[in-house]
Image (cartoon, one colour):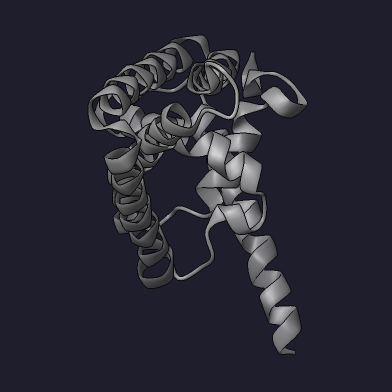
Length: 186
């Protein structure tokens, strides 16, 4: 189905939202390097501090199910990556324990988030997507990175014309921002 469904499951809309904030290749590369470690260490933190039993597993399942609902093929791959992050974070939590584990989470999160903000400030020259929609940005970031990599290296599209449709939405959003900026300056 074009768009991956309506409303919450509209892949084109989600990808365009995130893509509008990520057009600079250096910033996209920075995200490719640091988004999944943010996800993994967030799971590690959940293993270490579990606000409820199996919190990390629930978190992983929600992300995986969401990605599969957007696109079965790439979503299944994203769900597998989520599961691998869950397994790795579980092993790390068991090995490191709380006293060292939280320090690993802190350092990794600070470093990875700093790199993200440098990517946006220095290379993209605009605020990150999380400023406008925190939940959507955090839910889509790992999947966006995966789709970008799949498209770049194997020309993957969830369906024919996906990237062309998304690019039109991105161009429209960027034009809207430019018009709004021009209006403020006049």
